[in-house]
Image (cartoon, rainbow, N blue to C red):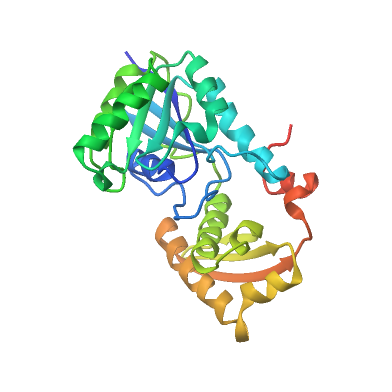
Length: 293
């Protein structure tokens, strides 16, 4: 008997969905920062065993959209409700269901087996956790509640075992040696964007998108040219920094992580271009891989 299924991870921004996904997959598939809206795409991570295949799906945090980019991000999150064999709704000890009551209602109406994951329990005491579990039982009565600490990997193995038990019988959906549905270039753009998120403040990280223009793989080296897009000339100056120092710093950090990801030496060149109001331009968003249909 072989089991396979799509296990979709949804919830509000910054509750630890990507940290949990990476812990379950055992690889660094999704980028992680403390900033909201770090995840913009729906990213698959595939875990294979002799008699099972789990296709995890990390999604953007649910938010009320202010521009076209966020509309696409919300589509990625809501689409995860339609094709889930097992649904993981992730919350944390600081989150409240009132933030997105509409989405919680959609989750409640979904027919797939539902695991409600309360993350970051290492940051509160047992009495508060018991109170929190009771409240979530009222909000999501059909959910099986599992408290975890994704960053410390506490109870993550239990989540994995429950997912395996809940999977339907099915042949695998992907080749058994496949780790994700995304091409190599995607992970390069995500790693560079992560470094922008970590190195710049305020609006800058949210105004940035990254595109790989060249990805040439040689025997012992990968040559990469990538463009960091911003929305305004002033943002371009901030990204580059005095004497190019800030951009060089981002490039160095990104290159080290890309080398670790591909286990190969990398030559990385970064450029910065202005694309005014790209977050509201459908043609640009499609080029960057966002779903607007």
